[in-house]
Amino acid sequence: MKLFLKTDTHFLIKKVLEEKLDVFKIKYNLINNNEILFLETIDTAIYDKIASVLNDYGFEIIENQKNIIVQKIKETIIEMIFNDEAPAVKSSVYLAEKLNHSYGYLSNIFSEVTYTSIENYIIIQKIEYVKKLIAHHDLTLTEIAFKLNYSSVAHLSSQFKNTTGITPSAFQRIMKKRTQITNQNIN
Image (cartoon, rainbow, N blue to C red; front, top):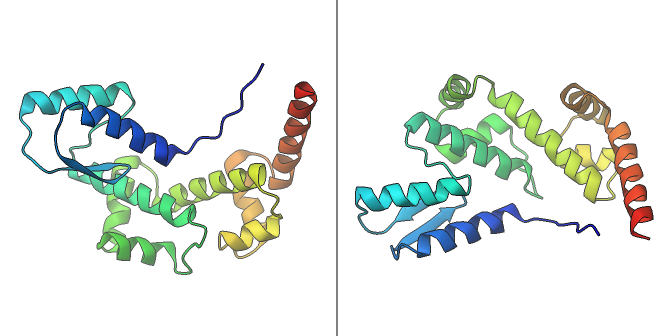
């Protein structure tokens, strides 16, 4: 018997953080899934225990300022792309306004820390979203291209193929075939 699960990663992250942090009986606020504001002073021993517990669940405390900025850039890009009502402004303008730094500054730090460009990261995230939309929604490629502010289906298809090695149409066929096989195995 197979069990198919759909996960809400934001809910999962929040739940794990709450369960693990509540054990320490420290007052805190979860600002978002990747930022915790402690409302009281924490001694080093407790801090180390918190870091260890969170590490067991794949969380890493980021202490380097450049890494914090990179993490905020990544979160903002994901928020921008996975938002049902994507902003109509250019990503460079959106990032600069949301993070209160010039795009040049953000771009330099991102490249220095990750060894890739913000633009490349945006493309990768967009393609991940396209795959999700193809797999779980009945949208046409035209609708997907419009939703993600691509200039054309051809532009979307080109980026998809360059990133995944296959066309979006081929990916659609693979997903339909996988669904058919899964449905046959269930019945």
